[in-house]
Image 1 (cartoon, rainbow, N blue to C red):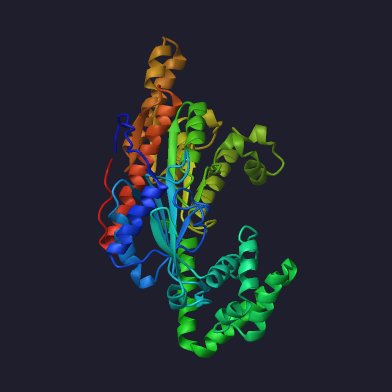
Image 2 (cartoon, one colour):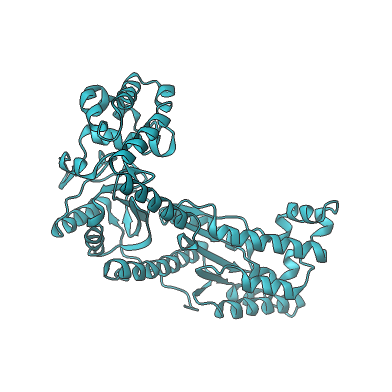
Length: 463
């Protein structure tokens, strides 16, 4: 990638109002009308939710994506698609102060385990036009919006989201007959009536007790009316879920290397809030192989030997590296429900380059083999302290040793496919901005290639 300091040149972030106006116009040009499922009360200037939920038919997704891609000034840095939703993360939109990204969901169907609980056509045909400032868009009818908001947590996750409950309760109380009628095609009359009455009463225990009857009723009626289609829908759902949960394709990893541990920590801590809307989950996980910080692994491996004594021991060191190596690989395939971005400040390459720092007393050949076989991050960022080192360097052995380690770090990152070397002698804020720019550039290019294959998507404009 690059070996020089990046220029942190970012165009001004688009306001939420400007973005929504541009997107609604683009959707209209391709023959789609924007339908927002919820949290639109703060439009055009404020988004009351963590994301913006659009509702479109699955067949309309290619047009909706091309409409989004036609908007200048934004870049898509994350994309994940399930049977019922396409999830996007946009950089260049500021929905609130200090927030640089926006999470958008294109909801494609309203289902549980692949079984439809509210037909798309019914929602679209009953949608109501709404105006907010200069924006014109559609929202579900009060009954449909209440069902969607209720089932997003209750039917799917067996819990009740209190944020939406007052509005749900009010809609059911004012439209009891319509609410039961909307549920009736997919659920039995008894189950639908019981749910609506429980919501109107506000009895949380009764509402939660409706979960099992709702799921059973939906499954039975779906199988009775569409036996083959329902079975195929369930199979497709679980196939896609398996792919999402146990595939490394939904994991993006950035590893930040550097000799100054405090400097790495400061950059990562500054990056985390900047990247919070870059994926469903943004995390800074502890590394499993770091010997001084994971003594319990050594204790498990050696039993009675103390962690302090074992940290530099041959067998203890290799056991800890092996356990950490396995954790890294297992972590590639488990523990995620959707797109995840991991920012880490340590990897096994650190151990290979500077074994004494991590009290490693095992075989270096084993450590190098583990490093080569470990899952590689999507982007390496080296914080190069060359300026600081030159200012403080003298004739001491320590300075010569530090210079050797620095050269080893430089040589290592040059063997990687995607890397950037940043000048760590500058203020943390500047280094963080350059690291942010490198991460956004890397992932937006990857998403561009993916979307081009899926939708003949135009590339994102570069700042």
